[in-house]
Amino acid sequence: MLYQETVSVTKMQEPSFDDGDTKVLRQESPTHKISFIERNDQEHYSPDMPGVPSVCCRTTEDPYEIQQAGFYVRYLAEGAANVVFTIHKWTEKVTHRKPLVFVSGFRRERLYGRGMFIGKVLRISKGHAKTGSCQEIMDGFEKNIRPLFASPSDSTTSNSGSDSKKVAPYNYRAHLMNYEPITLTKDVVEELTNEIDEQSSRHENLSIPIMEQTGILLPDMTSQPKESVTIEIKPKWLQQSPNAPRDAYRCRTCALETSRSAKDKKPTYICPLQLLTGNATLIQPYIRRKVVKAVAGFRELQPTSNQIDLITNRITKYLTTGHGHTLLQHLRHTQIQLDPKGIRERDVHKNADPTFEANLQLAMTMRDCSMYIKAAYSDHYMDTSDLDSDAEIECKLGDLDSKSPEKLDDWDKKEKGLINGAWYTRIDPDLERLHHEECLVSAGWKKYVPHHW
Ligand SMILES: O=P(O)(O)O[C@@H]1[C@@H](OP(=O)(O)O)[C@H](OP(=O)(O)O)[C@H](O)[C@H](OP(=O)(O)O)[C@H]1OP(=O)(O)O
Ligand SMILES: Nc1ncnc2c1ncn2[C@@H]1O[C@H](COP(=O)(O)OP(=O)(O)OP(=O)(O)O)[C@@H](O)[C@H]1O
Image 1 (cartoon, rainbow, N blue to C red):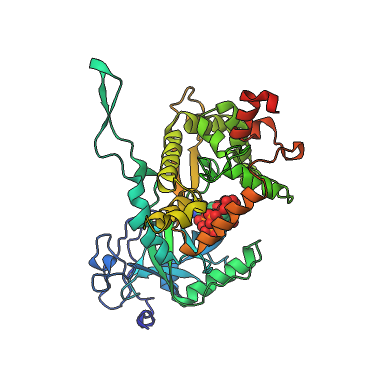
Image 2: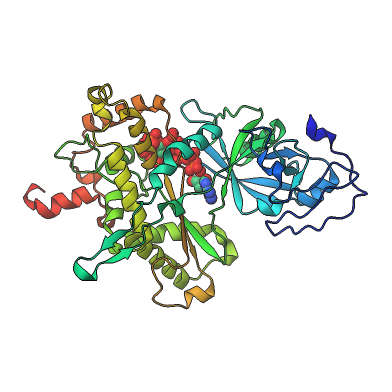
């Protein structure tokens, strides 16, 4: 294999190498094949091999490579379909992992400095039958998902009459993450699966094939103690299911969660329709729980309770009156546009409308994505009162993965189960939630049809 052509480099002149910077500084050595890649190096784009990721991750035993560019990965978290790792500078203290390096995807011998990758996470697919490979996820993202976040081409007009003024269109794409494909050699995949075996608490029988495959690099949205706190929200169904019974007492998400809590799963979610109302009094306790959970792992670097309150208030404001609210409305809008009839109407519409199923799949992606909301909290910002609702908040959407058509039957079954199991409609004191966790639909019944209650 080409990368085995790398040779011992102990005699090489020390490169000028800035580890913390995204610049890659080293020029080609006259005597050895190892070199660092310039930022605009042609090889970065694998010009002769279109479709091959420009970056490859491989293991190394070469001391020079380890010293200059070696790193290791740590298991961060996983969902049903993917596992995510953080990237760390190599240290001798890591005894149970092999050192890894990033190299050009083409010849696999020219090194990338790790400074370009620390601050990113690596996401790999678990390889389940009904979820896509990383390559499929990336293709679907570019082809189907990114266009859903196009800003309106013209600027919109606010106010009426002579006072009307132009408002810049909102840039929804600012909430999309940059996806970078990366080839993972077989050895690396093996390392990653070992790390999962040791760290994952899910104890699943994973079917990740031990072979060369593509992973995805994404911006690292995790909290940084002393700097920022990130909470993760799954907004789920931001409108009622088109198939819900007319007398539904719960929205789609609350109906499903109620069916689960009846089986002893403790739900810690917010009704998506409540999230969308912009009602800070209802949303704030939920955000506070999320913030407290997010900082639980900070240990001695815990923010003060005053800081926790301020972070909570800022994120709440972001989601009720800031760009977070605008984004939630956009997600709702796309969910409605893409699935106006509902899965139960599939047989009636799919022949007349060839886009019916593909659009429904996209709607399900928009109902299953995650919002990562990262709030900076250095002392400087904490001291500033009356902050703009979006100040120092970064929000990115994760898990915008295309859904497989093989899931259509599962969704149909799920919807049918919710309807026939009366999970939308059943009124039972044992299934009631606390006031601040109540479904908006239930709250509406109690408010507007009190005699029914
Ligand atoms: O239907 P739901 O609401 O249970 O959504 C599933 C998610 O459960 P959640 O309610 O968010 O905890 C579920 O998330 P978790 O397993 O809870 O992490 C998955 O996102 C699943 O999608 P996929 O199998 O990865 O394509 C999701 O399945 P889809 O229905 O989106 O296919
Ligand atoms: N860019 C990121 N930055 C920080 N953490 C992340 C990032 N992407 C994912 N994570 C963490 O990894 C977890 C799993 O990631 P992800 O949601 O992409 O997996 P999934 O299998 O697609 O999820 P699902 O079960 O919803 O299908 C997330 O819940 C989050 O904690």
